[in-house]
Amino acid sequence: MTQAELIRIIENAFNGVEQPVEITLHVAEAYDNYDYNHNSEHRKKDYIGQWQKVPESHLRSCTAALSFVDKIGMRFYLPAFMIWYLRNMGNIDAVVPDFPLYALDNNSSDTKLNNYHEERFSLFNSEQLRTCALFVKFCANCDDELTDVDFAKKKYERYWCKFE
Image 1 (cartoon, rainbow, N blue to C red):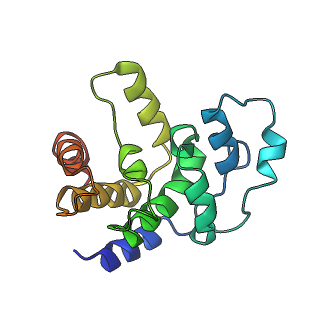
Image 2: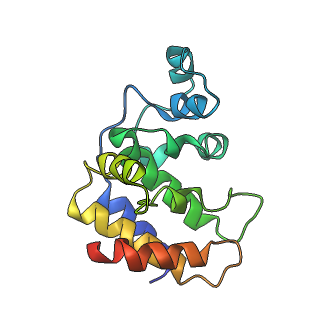
């Protein structure tokens, strides 16, 4: 599968998903800095509209956000991050390595983190889960030194393959 084919699959699988209202991209990024008291200020920075049009500058400046979004935010922002990552693979100046890939870690060895993962992916339908599996598989098969191939292989073989 090519990058372009995978991008089309991602676009189709997540087309029309709802945008978060509470924990938006900039709110989630603020949480990474322990700022839990200024959500309304951070929401003012957010793009409103389809996930396909989230500005690249927002993705670049909010790389920790995927660790803090809720299930609505995960379904909305993850495809934007995955496509941004795919379009910029191999360009170390454009991508902070592997944040979209690491967001797909099911943390199987830690019950609390695994439950958190399950909750954040609870809105994903079977097509969206399959798309995530294809993304992890694609990363597992990369010969790019900028991708954590070993992590992707392990996560695909131990978890994501069941969705393909």
